[in-house]
Amino acid sequence: MRPLFVVLSVLIGLVVGTSAAMLLLPALNFYLFTLAVGALEWALWFLVAALIGLLLALVGVRSSGALRGAAWLGLVLNLAALLIIGGVWILALRSPLNVRSNMPAVVDAGPGTFSLATFIEGPKTAGEIEIERDVVYATVAGADLKLDIYRAPDLKAAGLHPALVVIHGGSWRTGAKGDVPTFSQALADRGYVVFDVGYRLAPAARFPAAIGDVKCAISYIKTNASTYGIDPNQLVLLGRSAGAQLALVTAYSADSPELPASCPAGDTSVRAVIGYYAPTRMDYYNVIKPELSPGALDDYLGGPPEAFPDQYRLARPVSGIGASTPPTLLLHGSRDQFVRPRDMHELADALAAADRPYTAIEIPWANHGFDYNLTGTSTQRVQPYIDRFLAAVLE
Image 1 (cartoon, rainbow, N blue to C red):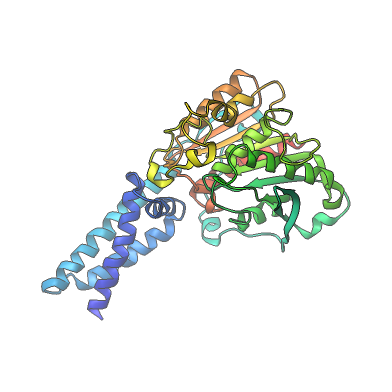
Image 2 (cartoon, helix red, strand yellow):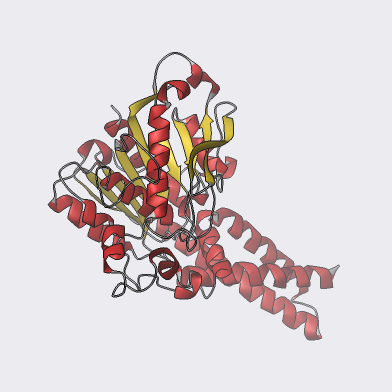
């Protein structure tokens, strides 16, 4: 059994050790990036794994020859992972959030308190969430565009309810509605009717096709508001990553003739918008590690900014800020390896200068995709801000 324990120790050490390193170093590829996200947002389980690996290694350190050397390797890897992941986790929990806002009702109560019990139990819903899939909201260029609807059964009761329109990420060229169903289920459990929207992807459908598609979805939802039991005036867009850029531009350009809907559409205005780690500057070199998403802006916008200046101008949310810009909530990790936090801060500067309601939160040590763990290290701290923002804009 001793050789098996040592082998397992080394294998565990390689995984958790690499994950620990990715908390401190830039990821070289997408797979290493996912380890970095996991090591913080699921830190407890990585620490448990490292502790198991350490105990297994201790079994073999008194061996001789190659087995002893392997045991020492496992011991070092797992011990280093314990120290690094544990240290970063503590720092992340103890470091204050960088909060900027002109919405006192959203920020005055402060951040959430991390609960180990909630972390261990994971996301729960009060009841079964009903899901209606593949509802066609428009037909564009011969293709049916579809959305999924999430709602708690008790929302079918009398009265109108607020709606959240969720827009998936994927560098504008991958991903699909329903990529993270637990995210939409959790929102539905909070009392919202959730519409998870699919849209045409680049490079086959370049900007502003996806913007136009989202506007079609908004029009469809508002036109059928009574069918779904929602208040058409209580609609909030929520996007993540590339989907956050789509959400912001859509919310800021409801009446723009330069960015029309992809189909005949009515009112496409929204009450507010939430953007998770949104690329907003659309700087051609704004990806910290281009190998994580090579050629994304070329596929989305057609090429570099000097060749497509109007595309880049319109794709920047800041271009649409005006007197009617709806309230905005921006969330961004300080260690984001896809999009710099600078993108959030420059948009927040513009919203502040225009005196539009906004809240921008930079989360220490959090990476791109931090919210994939709904009860993770970062989400627990910012969830109260999200809840209070929605309560404030939908009152």
